[in-house]
Image 1 (cartoon, rainbow, N blue to C red):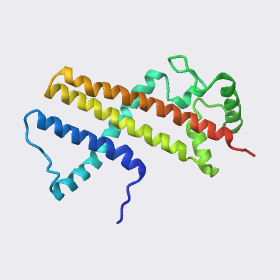
Image 2: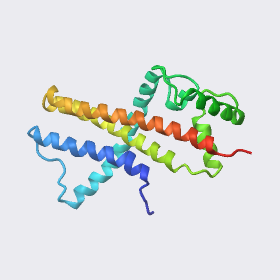
Image 3: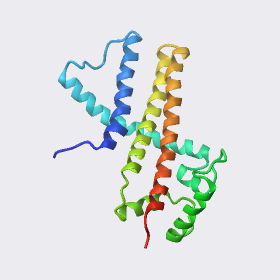
Image 4: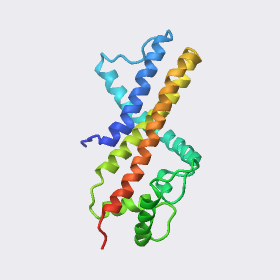
Length: 201
């Protein structure tokens, strides 16, 4: 059976897992141990790629629990910020545009706390272009995976060297986390803007 990797599989699964295993091996070598994988051997490289695919799923599985905690701290995912403010007092859009969106969504779906999934499914069924939405979602998955990767590397670096050196992956984690949040907001905004641009019967 022929298997072609999708953009999501490459971005969301392979990139974080390769980053984790490759940098993890560098930490392992520089802490006085021998290399685990010899990339000059085809067999080792092939096994490395297969292992990365599996570990990528493990990273994203951890990421699912991580994002649940993250959005709980915010008071809900960005798609919910259309109706209610998050814990920091922010809506997704300015007040005038928000009300316009809510009126159109309510007329189509009735009263709901979160219109994100309904609006996206409606766009797909209607044949509207969702490429930008999907790109934002893929990037969100990428940075969710990289956030988990850098947290693991933070612990690994602290154990192998010292907390001073571990500050480096921790700072990178913060940067990845901010990008993850940013793409989540872009994803939510793009769904509602695309729905607003859709002409309904």
